[in-house]
Each structure stands twice: as C-alpha cells, then as structure tokens.
Amino acid sequence: MAEVKPVLVVGAGPVGLVAAAELIRHSVPVIVLEEGAELSGEMRGSTFHAPTLDMLDSYGAAARMVEQGFVAPLMQYRRRDHGVIATFDFGVLADVTRHPFRLQCEQFKLTRILHDILKDKPGFSIRFGAKVASVTDEGSHAVAVLEDGTRIEASHIIGADGAHSAVRKSAGIPFEGFTWPERFLVLSTPFDFRSIIPDLADVSYYADPEEWFFLLRVPGGEPGGLWRAMFPTAPELSDEEILSAEFARARFARIKAGRDDYPTRHRTLYRVHQRVAETFRRGRILLAGDAAHINNPLGGMGLNGGVHDAVNLGEKLARVWHGEAADTVLDHYDRQRRGVTVEHVQRQTIANKQNLEAKEPAAQAAFRERMADAASDPAKAHAYLLQVSMINSLRRAAEID
Ligand SMILES: Cc1cc2nc3c(=O)[nH]c(=O)nc-3n(C[C@H](O)[C@H](O)[C@H](O)COP(=O)(O)OP(=O)(O)OC[C@H]3O[C@@H](n4cnc5c(N)ncnc54)[C@H](O)[C@@H]3O)c2cc1C
Image (tube, rainbow, N blue to C red):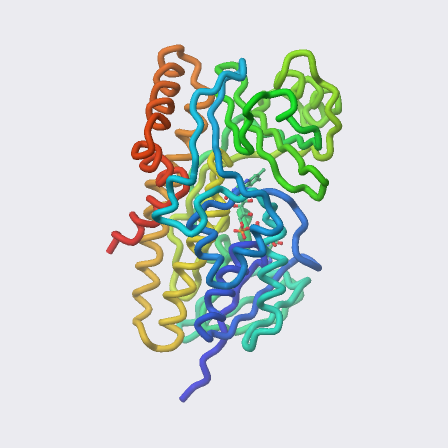
C-alpha cells in the first residue's frame, strides 16, 4: 500500500495550530509551515466565546487559557453619556456550555499553549522561517513550494495563512467583499476605567451617532490588566495623524469628559474588511480562518469562527486521511463553514457595526429598545446570547447537509 503523506498546515496562527491539534488528536501526521522565525506576539484578537473554549478543552488548552486570561461574565451596551442600555450575563448559558462567559485573553497566548501541547506529540512537526510561495493539487497528492524552492508533498494542504493567504491566491480562489472606508484605531492603557465609570463591565460597547467605541479589559502583561479602546477614524486622515499622541489623547478625552491623561501602551491602526473566499475547498487545497474569511472585530467573531472552521475541517479530513470517508466530506466542510460565515458571521458583524453607529434617532431608539428588551428576562437573554456567543452559528452549521 502506498504511504499516505502527512497533512501540511500553512500558518502557525491560532487557526493553523487548532487544525493541527485536531488532526493529531485523530492520529494524522501534520507538518506546520510558518513564515515567521517564531510564533507571532501580536495581541490582535482577545475574545474567546463559550463554544470555542469548549472545543479548546478537547486539547487541554481551555483551562490554561482561563488561567492566563480574564473571565468576563458580563457584556454591556452603553450610551455615550454612560447610561447603560443593557447588561447581559453569560451565566444564563450554563445549560449549553461548560464555559458560560467570554474569556478576554490575547490570541498569542493560545498559540503558545497549543504549541507547548503539540510539540512532543508523535506525528507533529513545525518549521519556522518556512514561507510558502505556492501550492498545487497533483491529483494523488498536493505540493507546497517554499520561497527558497523547497518542495514538500502532502496528502492535503490547509491554508491557515491569514488574510493575505498565499495558499488562497495560489489556488486562484477569489476573495470577494468590501473594505470599510474608516480604519479602526486600538489604544490600550493600564488606567482602570471602572474607577471613573460606575458599573462598567469588562466588555462594553458604546453606541453613538458621532463616534461609537468599545472598551475591553485584557491581561496585557500588567498587574491590573489593560483596557483596550477601539474607535473608528475618518478616512481622510493620514496614518501619522491618527497614530500621534495628540490624536490618542483626543480620542481618550471623549470617553469621559474632563479626562485625557491616560498612559498609552499601544496605538495600532487596522484596515477592516468584510470578505469571504469563493470556496473553502479546491481539491486537496483547503482554507480556514482569516485565509477564508475576514470581518470587522465587533462581536469578536473572526478568530472564533476560524477555530470553528479548524475543528470542523480537522475532524473531516482525519476521516478522509484514514480512508474512513470519501473526500466529498470536504465539500460538506465548505458548505457548512462557508454557509454560516456568510449567513451568520458576516451578517452579524455588519449589523453590530450599523447598530453602534446608527445616525437616525429612530434607529438608535429601536436598537436601545431591542437590547433593553432582550436583557429584560433570562429567557430572552438566553436566546440573544446564543447568537452573540456563536452557539447558534454552530447549530446552524450542524443542520447543513
Ligand atoms: C484589532 C483586531 C482585533 C481583533 N479582535 C478579535 C476578537 O476579539 N475576537 C476574534 O475572534 N477575532 C478578532 N480579530 C481577528 C483575529 O485576529 C483573526 O481572525 C485571527 O488572527 C485569525 O487567525 P488565523 O490563524 O486565521 O490567521 P493569523 O493569525 O493571521 O495567522 C496566520 C499565520 O500564517 C503565517 N503565514 C502567513 N503567510 C504565510 C506563508 N506564505 N507561509 C507560511 N506562513 C505564513 C503568519 O506568519 C501567521 O503566523 C481581531 C483582529 C484585529 C485586527
């Protein structure tokens, strides 16, 4: 019998390493190829939803994440004048998840934890400084060619190489969608906003017709944690203007009148897109995570959706690899995960942005009423939080044939 080649995972971000963990759990040999000399130290995503933590539990990663992160039991919508529109308690989800909260924890902690769990497992290997230039499907196997010309053969290739995915481009898969005109500025400070904003939850979204923003508390390597504030910025401003200390002070000044003297730890500017790959599968080439879909960060769904892709794909690909399923199950992966990405994640993240920035008083009032009503009794809150925490999107995926 011909030897079955390992699966190649391109990219050692959170999605690539979860895909590797799922494959290794099912005794499939995996080689991870990572362009960087080491795992990325970028903070980026910091929100982990309940079902994602339930999944990470299977690899022994969830408890370590909880240990290194902040458990956020509450989520709030507020008005610019600091009035609370609605407070939701994730505790109502205790009947459907082992993790009824949002975890605020930098994504680079997940990659380190997964790498630590995987590094000595039989069948797992990772190569740093290995930038994939192109991939091809040769019918009986797939081939990745590195920038230095090295060829690596694999049974299948998972492109988990982020938004600019070389795997997606090499496979000729279009990445349709649009880019928002405004960029998002993320500022972080060790100043504890709870000392000046009564009842502030660790996850708080501010709706405002002039300038929405959100405040999230993350560990950030500081004794009391860091607060991350995210603001939209006007398209006509230059990066230099936006990233200046004066601009940061002016944004911070709008959080609470009379204060602008917060020490700033990070100032980062992001261009934000809504794009979905035309397919998540082309023969032996598969896409997952940001390589397959990107969206605005309101609701923390990009990274979480990517982890959900990786688990779904890893389980199906393992069956194909072991000869227990026809490779058409990989089309099922595409239908399920691309289906809910379009129906749920794209739609929800666009709606989240539109709700916070609504200019019309009638639209603002309607959003406030909907949220206050949803938070007004545990059954309504339960229904709303199933959506917010992406449990509904997973249930919907499970229904897709
Ligand atoms: C400001 C901001 C805040 C966010 N907040 C959240 C949040 O709270 N919750 C959430 O769910 N999501 C959030 N996201 C989105 C989240 O960061 C991404 O969805 C997540 O990083 C996707 O993971 P990934 O593994 O698919 O890709 P990446 O994290 O981009 O990892 C890709 C990896 O592939 C490697 N690579 C790239 N090209 C190659 C190549 N050619 N060869 C080999 N290796 C390669 C890269 O070096 C990298 O290590 C946020 C994003 C931003 C920008």
